[in-house]
Image (cartoon, rainbow, N blue to C red; front, top):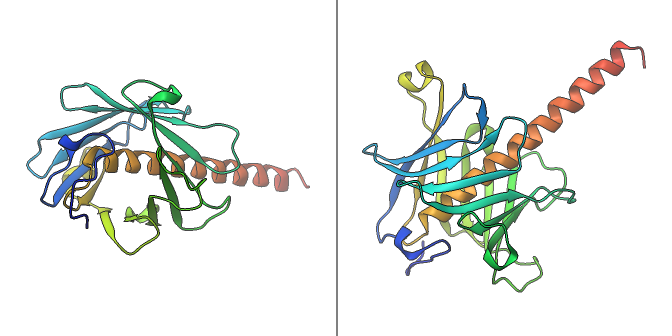
Length: 215
């Protein structure tokens, strides 16, 4: 828990009190990666504009007034799953904010390292670390490789969410942490796991076809 505001996107998104938010995604949609983030009273805080299903390469996070805050872009042809974040709708290096990547090529449980733009460790020492189980929506965000928790998420299931086909989960953000930054990490976490899930499904389908063909 930080004793002073830690602003990555903007100090206006840091508050001295703990904040619980609900992140909702429509399951039955033609567009992938679209979310709405609201407080516990149902007030919109952020929106996430996704891309057409099947193209997991870009997300834009908007504030409640639809102003673009952050653009998240997948870095292609890398050894590890990696996404970069930029200010506004930019993807220029001068507007680079941070990167998130998987520390290892293969992993059974969620583990992602976050490196801010001013990190000079050549990615040896991360600024934030995400651990947990994405399939259960049970992940914790730590400050660096420490036991200090800055945010954590857990599944939120209601009869209404099941009825209207929404994937809902809650995120608890601790005092003084940049809430827009935490939302961007959750969106990247979702995107990386979606790509990994698609790869596993594709590999399984290929193996099944090979077995069926007698190989």
